Length: 301
Image 1: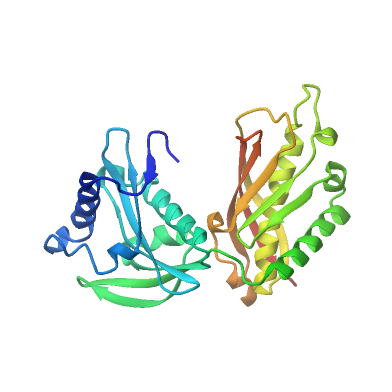
Image 2: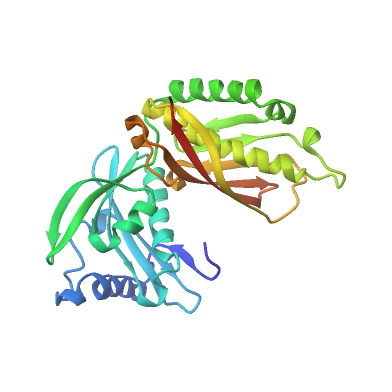
C-alpha cells in the first residue's frame, strides 16, 4: 500500500457521510442523479472499505456483499479525481477481495462499465457476459476466482507432484532444500533453510532468494493449470526483484491467487497465455524482498 494511505471501514458519522458523498460524486452526480441514489437496501449487510489519505481526504471507496455460500459482489467502486491513476482503485479492490476470502467465499462478481473494463481485466477479472445498461452506459458482467477448484486432497496431491518435479528436474531446488509448506487453494507458501543458501555475510545468497521466489511463482501457475485440467511448458518471460533487507533466518515465500493477473483458459484452444505473479519473501516477521514475474505457458505440440 502506498505510504500515507490507510485502508479501513468508515467509523464515525463524518466518515460515513464522506464515504457516501464520494460515491454520489463519482457514480451518480455526473448523470444528474439525486443524493441518496448512491445507496441501496443492502448497505447494512455489506462490507464497506475506504482508502484514507494522511490529510483525512478519502481517495477511494468500495463495497462488498455476499450473494450466496460461494460468491460475493463488488459494487460502488469510486476513486476521487485527485487519486485517479495512482493505484487507489486497486487497493480498494484487493481489500474487498481479502474480505471475501475471510468470509470463506470462492469468487467475486461485479458489473463493469465500458470505461473500467481495462482496469478490471488488469486486476485479474474475466468477462462472463453482459450486464444491464445504466445511464445509457454498457456494462459487463465480470468474475474473479479467489480459490482454486478442488479440495484439500487435490491440493495436497498437486503440491507433492510439484515439489517432486522441482527436485527431479531442477537439481538446485533439491540442494536448496526448497519445500512447499502450505497451499490452501488461495495462498502458496514455500521455504528454504538458511544453511545451504548462506553467503559470506551469513545471510541468504541473493541467487537463492531469486530462485525461491521464481519457483514459488512458477508453482502457483502450475497449481492453477492443474485445477483447470490444462498443461503446457511454463517459462519465466520477464522478472523484477527488489531486495529490502538481508535475510538472516529461513525465509517464507508467499504468493496469492487473487494477485495473479492473466487469463489462462485460452491455453485450451492451443494459444500461448501469460500471467503476472507477485511473490513476497518474509523473514523474522518482515518483508525482505519482493518478486514480480511475467510467466508464459506455451501450448503442448
